[in-house]
Length: 196
Image (cartoon, rainbow, N blue to C red):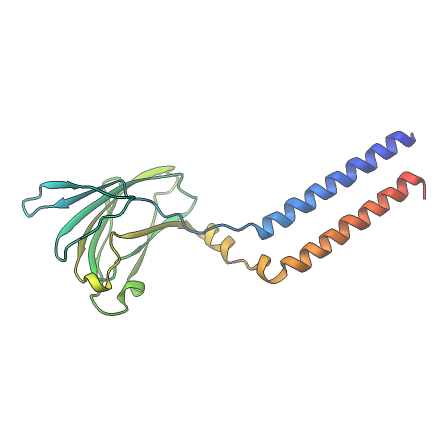
């Protein structure tokens, strides 16, 4: 009987410790609310509509010229639930296609400070696990334009989780209280094992 009680007390202590650890970990987990896809292919769209393939170095294309039309393409995999794209298009004209369907078209203002102000939120297809993203991009103002186009994938859940400041504001007190709780639980279970 005593061995069984001791075994149950040890098992209960380990279970409480594990649950406490995983609860604290979920509050202090850090991550990025955004995924930054890398462009896999790029073309220059000529006046007659023909495409000239361009070489990307690490997803970047150097030397984009004002007024020329460029096409960028990448595959988006492991799309989050209720996911969306964030696109900065200040100083550029762009058209965004998801699996060949146009979902956004705009021309960003070519003025100082337009880079951060001209931003689009584009919903991703519901229930899709992957899709192909294509952007036709024309640089109108190289000074106030981010190129190649900066696209971020996120979701309401990821942004919400990232904005919770549990770790920043209450991480240390929560950890201290959790440690105190585990120690008191251990003392209580030790007392049960000793018959007190």
